[in-house]
Every structure is written in C-alpha cells, then in structure tokens.
Length: 316
Length: 217
Image (cartoon, rainbow over all chains, first blue to last red; front, top):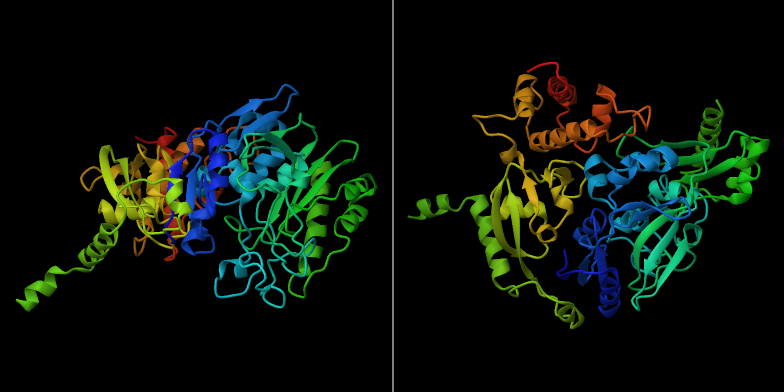
C-alpha cells in the first residue's frame, strides 16, 4: 500500500473543502472497497479524509413523507430499518443479496453507491485498463467477459457496476444530496448520477472533485409488490450475473431494473410502459441495443427469464 | 554460539524486527493535508488507543496498518487469522463495538477508542465460550485456521438474529427471522472453510443457538 496522510473530518463542508485542496485525496467511510483496492495499488490516494465521525448516520422522515438516509448509515442498518422493510422492501432485499454480514456491517450507503467495478482487468495492475489507467486500453474486450456488461458499455470499457443496492435506489427514484467544497449543496437524481463510460470510463459518476454525499432521500412509498432476484454462480456472497429489481402494482403497471449487466443500474422507463402488455414486450424494450460477447450473450436470455419469473411471482 | 543465536531468531521475531525498523524512520505523528500536498510520501506514523478484550492498548504504528495487523503484529494477538487479506474469507473476523467485521478491511487508525473483541477475549482454555465448546464437541474444524473467525462471526451472527436483523433467505422482512439451517448457512457465508468442515460447523452453531433460544442450559 502506498503511504498516505490522514485526517478526521469534523463537518461535511470541512471534509469537502479539504478534499478539494489536496490532490489525490479520498474520503474513507466503511473502507471495505477502498482499502481492498489500496492494498493492490489500484487506488493510490495520497490523503485519506475519515468521514466516520460525521453526524450522517440517521434515517429520518422527510416532510414529503419519504425517508432521508444519512450517507454513513451502514448497509446492515438500512436493510434492517423497520420503515425500509415495510415501505421500500426492494431496497432491503437488494442490500441483503449483496456481500457478507461482516461487510454489510461496515459498508455505508454512500460507499455502496460509489464502489468500483469488479472487472478482473481493473484489479490486475499488469493489464491495460481504461478505467484504472486512462488511455491504456481495455483488456476485457477480446478477453474473458463472462461477468461483464452486455448493454450500455462503450468501446473503451465493458465493466459492470457491482452494486445491488444501487439497482433498488434507481428503481425507487432516489435523490443524492451532496455538499461541495464551497459549502453549497445540491441534489442529484440517481438517474443522472452514474455516467455513461464513453471514452472516459475512469470517471464513474457526476460528482465534482471534493463533493461529498451527505444523504440519499427516497420519495414517499409507492406501494406495490417489491421483488429483488439475484442470479449468481453460488448461493451467497457473490456478484450478480443478472439481478432483477421490480415493484409491481395491482393493475399490472410497475418499475423494473437490472443489475450485473451494465456500467450502472439498468432501468429504461419506456420498457416499463410496456409492462401492462406483458413481460415479453417489456423485456424486449429493456434489452434493446444490447451488444453481448459470445461469452456473455447468455445474460440476455437469463435476464429475460429472470424478469419473467419475477413478474409472474409478483402477480401471484 | 552460532546455534543459540539462530535459534533465538524465530520467524515471528524476525518479522517484528522488520516492522520496527520500517516504522523507526517514519514521521512522528498524525499529519495534515499540507504534507500530502508537498508530495513527500514517506510512511506516516500514528498513535491510536484501542480497547482490546477489555484493556486499553495505546499503539504507535504505521498509518497503513490494518486493524488485523495491529492485533497480530503489534499486540501479538495471533488468534485472529490472516487468510486472504481482502475480506473474502472471514478468517480475520473480530467484533468491533459488538459487531462482526473483517479486521483486514479497516485501518487501525480509524478506530481510536473503539472496543475490539478477538477470539482471545471471547473465551479462555479454562473458560470456553459456548461456541468454542460446541466446535470441539462437534469437531467443527480440520486445520483450524478459519475457526477463530468462524466463532467470532457466529457469536455476532446469533446476536443479529436475536435483534431481528433479516437475511437474504428470510421469507418475510417484517416477521422476526427464524433460527434454522438455511438462515445460518446464509448468514455465515462470509466465513470460508477450505477444509470443508461446514456440516459440523453448522451443527456446532445450531447447538448453541438452540441453547440460546432456551432449549438447553
């Protein structure tokens, strides 16, 4: 691990200001992803700003009837919160489908959103990777691609976003609240939070340098039947080959999103408009434009079948 | 003379000597952003006080030291094991302020004042923790390397069930989770046993869980 300096932030604004001052600074909260990558020297921060002491670990109700989730709320606590279990069950289910008990105890809401891809070439510092070393090339294209993206990728990067929680957040129209280095605050709808990889896959999201996530808000509950189904190579503690999140209403309308197939949670609102006509037109629209490789084309069939199973189950 | 000298240099002492000489040249204390800005990236030293198994332990260590390495190398609490060092195997599981975590995936410096419980703090050879006794009774290991992590993890996992924390396999999110083999298998998936002693580990945990639920003394 490369040497770094360290400070404990006292306020969110101070943390953001400090992060903007120091080139190569990073926030650290749970650290479960960052430290793993620092050991491999995939991440080489020069300065760590420990945000664990900030007062951002509460879940509260918003005046609109939704919930505000502090960025430091641990994954275990978010999944176990009575309001989340009752009104936003797809979020609890998605979180519980990810990682292990030990990791969920440390991992935070903001850190989960910000975790890096698990593309094996991103992790291997001996191999070119545009996300890790911009401009070096993509080893995954033409390489081993079974786990990688089938839709929404680019000619520079075919990595997937690994988060289950983010799929549910996308489904629930979460809003990401931040503070910037100049102390101004802003709200980013999750639909605008993740970037298309394009020619700059090294930039995962639309946060500015030093910008700190302070909370994630959910609009008032939308009712319906909530489902999250994750298909993976083993029954637990593995990343998704395909995951389907769904909130289905009694009249057949609903929301659907996929994990494990794209550089970010994959939701296409136009596909949801097809839902009352049945799963097949919705699946077709959701996966339109997919560009799988020979090794991961199975994900398209798997996604359509998993979606079909989830919708059938939701309407039972 | 030569023989007695070489005997004294055990592998562990050699590693410790190396660690000391590496930190001896480090800068004196917790640092600020300006030093990073200057780009002088020497190893940095830090002081941190951990409460380990009930006792306050003040440590001076390289900033990069994980909680796992602080326990093993600085405090010689080698019951906590280093398996993968990447949070995948669970051999390093300890209790941090009562909750199970991978000690390899967090820095010691982040836990000033925190309460840490390791396998050495759960039970002793003369006063075994019920899970330690159950692992012996059910032969819940072969090589034993994953065992301290399995036991720390299981102790916290049973607490989580008691607190009503749901899991991936819980049929209902709103009812209390039920104790059962599927629940325990899922909740213990962060602890790998490469000898494959899983069925006996499961028996040991179920035995203790049944006792906790009021079945046995």
